[in-house]
Structure formats: C-alpha cells, structure tokens
Length: 307
Image (tube, rainbow, N blue to C red; front, side):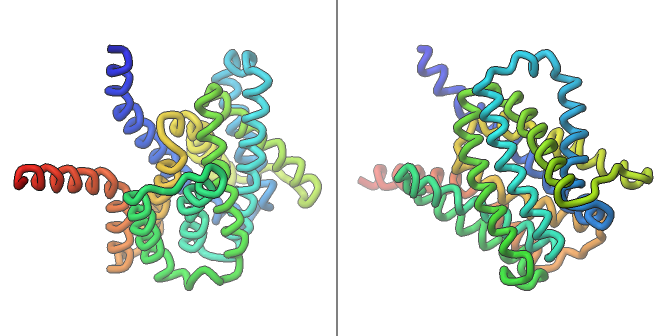
C-alpha cells in the first residue's frame, strides 16, 4: 500500500517540480535585459558581486536559523555549485558583451543537449527515443527563434557561451545529485553566497569595484538580486529535487521563449514568422514526451483490438 501510494504521488511531485523549475528559468532569463544595461556601467565581476552579494544578505536574513544549522557536507556541496555557477555567469557575461542576447540564449541553453551526452559518457546512459525527439524539436525551435537575427554561432563571443553551456550542463547534473541528498534551500543559499564572494575577490584583482551611484543603477542591481538571483538561483536545487537531470536540461528550452516574450513586451519587438515558428517548436518539445507516450498507448490498444 505504501509503495503504491508513493508511486501515485510521484507524477504530481515531478509536475510541481518542473513548473517551479520553469518559473526559476524564466526569472533568470530576465537577467539578460538588466545585465545588458548594467554592463555599460559595471565590470563583469563587480556586477556579479553586487547582484549575488545583495541576494545572499537578503536570504541570510530570512533563513538565518536554517543557515546556522548547515552541515559541513551541505556547505561543501553548495560551495561547489557556487564555483560552477560563477564559471557559468562569468562566461555568459563575457559572451553577452560581445554578441546579442539571442545568440547568448541559444548557445548557453544548448546545455540541454550536453546533459544527456554527459550522462551517456559518464553513466553509459543512452537518451530515450522520445527525449531525442524533444531535443531535436527544442534545438530546431531555439535555432529558428534566435539565429534568424543573431547571425549564427561563429560571431565574436560564441566561444565563451559554449563554455557557459558546458558548465551549465555540469551544474544541472551536480544539482540533480546534491538536491536529493541535502537540504535544497541551503544548497541554493550557499551557492548564491559563494558566487558573491568569488566575484568580489575577482573584481578586486581584475577591476576597480564600486557601488551603484544612481537610483537607476540601484534598481537594476536590486532587480537582478531579488528576481534573478534570490529566486532564480536559490530555488533551482529545490525545483530539481523532484525531477531528473535529463528533464531539467530539457527545461532550458523555456528560456529563449521567455527571452522572446520579454523582448516583445519591453523592447517592442515584432512577432515575425520565424519567431512564432521557433516558439511553437519549443513549446511542442516540452509536451512531446507525453504526446508520444499517449499516441504509442493508443496505437498498441488499437492493434490489440484488431487482433
């Protein structure tokens, strides 16, 4: 009875986790708009230090009791995730300085294809047929959505974004493992604090860090800290706890759709045919697996009736 009940609840848990993960990815996708503007005033590491430092102070104040109870292994896991995320964000911003946000979104979110590749190499786990179809659909959609305007993968800065995608795939896999062993909220807070500290040290070494000087600059930093870092990064371990690394990688496809929507709303971009087609393919990729399973089930059922 207990086992049956547990299995019955699993789909509901996975659905909730993936909805939260989609919200997290959408929140993080807004950082491209704010970061693009803020990079005109701040250095790369200075921006990351301010953004994640402010987010950590806020989170530490809210969850102080839980943080004081953190175990050594949880702390170490959170620090490792923070180091990986620092690499992702540094490479992302270096790429964003040299190319447009469309190319940035496409290349970085190609992490979705590196996750099953890494799993195949490390764990000898081959991606399923439905997931191969989902990957193909999502990549086709992202390609149509972004490359129509961005000019391809070989523009200046793309090499940084390929590195960001590889590091992000590593983050997804590490988070999938750690979030099932340790408190996912503590992991998220620790990784945010680690990014803030590492970025501050790097800013001291390579830049001349400064604080925001105008209300507009403070507004951008607070938006990045609260929405993109506080929510977008802290809750990823919690969101991934109820799903697999492979499916979490596939959820990266949400980011370019969100970026396109934000461009339409805030930058007044027009909905061109290639943009509509790209969004449609990406959304289809997100529902492809249950559709394929449903069609397969109905086909088998019809075959049995004929026999």
